[in-house]
Each structure stands twice: as structure tokens, then as C-alpha cells.
Image (cartoon, rainbow, N blue to C red; front, side, top):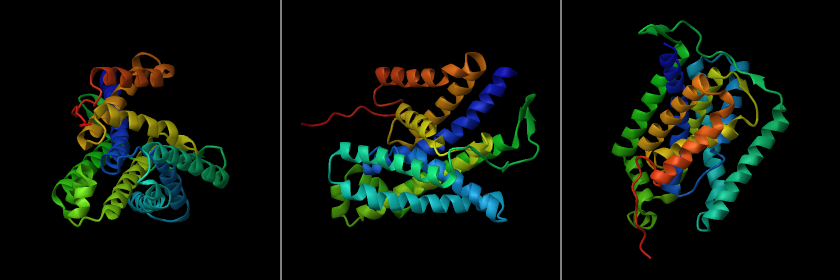
Length: 291
């Protein structure tokens, strides 16, 4: 019974990690950069949602939609202002810039809201149900269903729409895609918009589960989602999903059976083990580079 409850808790947390990890993996797959400011978009999404809850009468789904839209616009603005000028430069310059943007967002919201944690409203109240004798909360059910729905819609978008196919072409070869008439800037901006919108949805779900938010909440959350993306195979959307669920379930089982104090250490150790055994990630493929 206890194991089943921990497994359900892990699936709920893993669903949130999966949503965030998709943003990392899409940006890396298409723009070939690791956006360490992605975790702070989650923090921004949480504060935006909190302000909407406090100042409007929108229902929770309206709050999620508004937060996702605002975060998508923020993601596009950051890409255009901070990352686009460095696109032709070294990857190290882009990486350092993402860290700088992360610190900037943290300090801006620290000045706006202070360092004290803010209580987040209970967005999904109500009775859940019992599955094989194990109670499943309404929040857990909503988190899992929303995650699965968004993953299916994203997979269909990338695989079957014109914009999605353009993004895949840019991922394969930016030069060839540009010669075929594909707008590289639009594809990359759209990638940041989708990743940031997913981060905002994850922010509301996460903040509803752990209802205290602060300007630094996105750092570790984003880092663990990045680990999930690497474990699954960074650049591969199904890999991000798999890695998210692995990290979430591992965390829940470690908290339940070992120690909450050792969660982060064991999760990072899991990353090391996977990279030693399969450096490309669980679903990644080893590729030889011609010199």
C-alpha cells in the first residue's frame, strides 16, 4: 500500500518534471543551446499565476492559460534580446548568458516580491478517488491528465503541422532549412514560446502541490528537469518524458524509504550512472562526428 502511494506521488511529480524537461530538450534540439534560465521561467509563471488569482476572478484554467501566454511572450522576448545576438558565437557565450538571465530574473522578482515565500492558493480542491485501495487526489489526477494531453498535442504538432515540420528541419540542419525557405528566427522563437508556456503550466501544477513560492524556487526544479532531459536523451521529446517520470518516481521512493536529505545526492548520482553507461541518454543515439 505504501509503495503504491509513493509510486503515485512519484508519477505526479514526474509529470511536472516531464513538462519542464520538454522545454529544455526542445531548445537544445532546435537552437543547440542549454537554457539554464528555463527554471526561472517556472518561477515567473508561478508569480504571474498568483497575481492573476489575487486580482481577477478567472477560474483556474483561465489562470493557467493567461500565465502560459505571458510566459510564452517572456520566453520569446528573452530569446530575441539576449540569445539571438549570440547565435553565431560560441556555445560557451550562450551558456554564460543563460546563467546571467537566470540571475537577473531571480533578482528582479526578489526586488518585486521580497524573499519571503508567498502562499499559493489551492487550485484543484475536491475529492479524488481510490485506485486499488490507494487514494488518488484530484490534483494528482489533473496533473497526470494535463501532462499526457499536452504531450500528445505537442507530439502531433511537431510531427504533423507545417510549423512543427519546419522546427524539425531547423533541428536537423539550419543551413539547409534556410535554403528551403524556412524562417530560422520564427522557428526558434516558437520553440522558446512553447517551452516557456509548458513551464508555466508546470509552475501552476507544482505550486498547487507545494503551495509556497519564492524567487529561487526555479533553480533546483529547473536543474532536476534538465537532469531528466539528459537521462532520457536531450533533444528527444519522448526521452524528456521518460526522464521526467524516472526522476519523479526515484525522488518519491527515496523520500519514502531512504531519506529526504539524500534525495538530491542520489538523483545526481543517478545522472552520473546513466551517463557512464549510456552517455547519449536512455533514448539517445551515439553519433559520430566527421572531422
